[in-house]
Amino acid sequence: MEMNVGDFLHRLDLRGQALKGTNLGGAELRGANLRGTDLRETNLSGAMLRYADLIEADLSGANLSGADLAESFLNLANLTRADLTGAVLREANLVGAEFTGANLKQASLIKANLVGANLHEANLTRANLSGADLRGSQLSGAILDKAVYNNRTIFPEDIDPGAMGAFLLAPNASLPGLNLAMVDLTEADLKGADLRRTNLYKAILFGAKLDRANLAGANLSAADLREASLSGTILEKAVYSKKTLFSEGIDPRSGRSLFNCSQCIAARGKLNRSRLKRVRFKRS
Image (cartoon, rainbow, N blue to C red; front, side, top):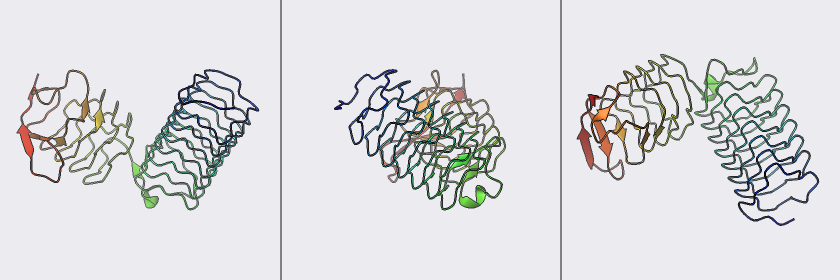
């Protein structure tokens, strides 16, 4: 069965179809029934798989980078060595799923159900595990460098996420000077947190609670701050760029911002050059 990029497969029943190794990059598979389907080595990069039924599907070696798998069903699925870089797995059901050697860099696993999942040697660098349930999961050899979690994340009793390089996101957290570049911090509650000099280059702070947080000297270049709460946030000498996304109504260039910032810096060009412009903000 040959598919073209972007084919519309909304809610189709594709069980038993010969899809192994096919190109389904960017395909619309929202709610599709792929239960038990052989999808080994299949290209599903950027595909829309929200609500899809992939229970017991074989996705070993598949390319799921950038795919949207939010609220999908992947219980007992085989994702051995699959590429899930930047994939959205928010509230996905992953009970007993096999992730041995899988690449989950920058994946969003917010509120995902990973009970009993095998994450042996999986790469979870910069992944967001906020609210995820990992009870009974296997994390031997897993990489959690710069992964983030919150007080609602449940790890196996023998796992210390901090010792494995993960960061706890919580109100009043002390995280000065950390490198959180490209980390998914969607809806993170960081009210009153110390984020001075933190590198948040290309970080996703969509809907984050940053009220009263100290971001003095932080690098916000190309960060996504849309819908973030910034009441009383300190942004003195913070750096942003033309690609930094602010909420509607917040325009740093106009000086009509809603946050407390007196000496933010607008970066022009590469940050390793000295072409910087100071701008001042006042409360509107």
